[in-house]
Each structure stands twice: as structure tokens, then as C-alpha cells.
Image (cartoon, rainbow, N blue to C red; front, top):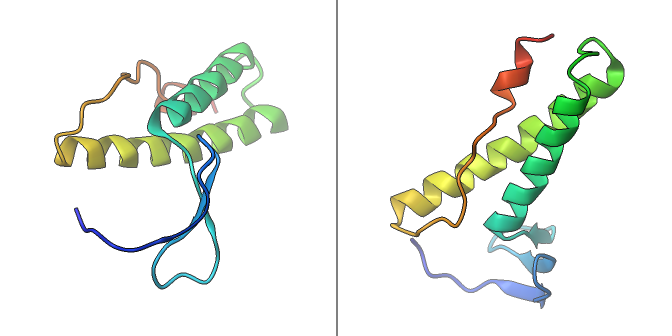
Length: 101
């Protein structure tokens, strides 16, 4: 873990806005548990559309869920590497739906 100064533009919970050192653009900060809930919602939508795996809608949902899952997995890896306890556990993955296409 590094300790650095960052510019904080908003500290709203799950809606913080910051500028990381060396970056031109601002970034959005989402807490890990909120990211997990977004992932779970997208998995639910995938489940409800799994009977139409060749549709444009299914493909777009799968892309969104994949991006969120990649971010969530990175979050989990960082927490585990730094001995930070998680308040959730991923039960379903986009990998469960990729073979439908």
C-alpha cells in the first residue's frame, strides 16, 4: 500500500470524485460492497435473459457484467493482498453465461 495525496472533489458515499496523482481526468470511487451489489444485479439480469443468448441485449448485458466483474475481482485481490476482510462473496460469475453464446 502506498500513501499519497489525492485531490478530493466530492466525498459522497458511493459517489466520491477524486483526481489520482499524475492523472488529468477525475475518477469516480465506488465502495466494494456497492460494486458487488451492481454485479449481483447484472447477474440477475443475465439469468433472466439466458434463454436468448444470441440477442444483442444478452451480449450487451454480458459485456457490462464482465467489466464490473473484472473490477470486482481486482478489488477482491487487493483486499486479500492487504489482509482486508470482505463483507461479501461472489457466488455467480459471468463465466457461467459465456458458454451460452
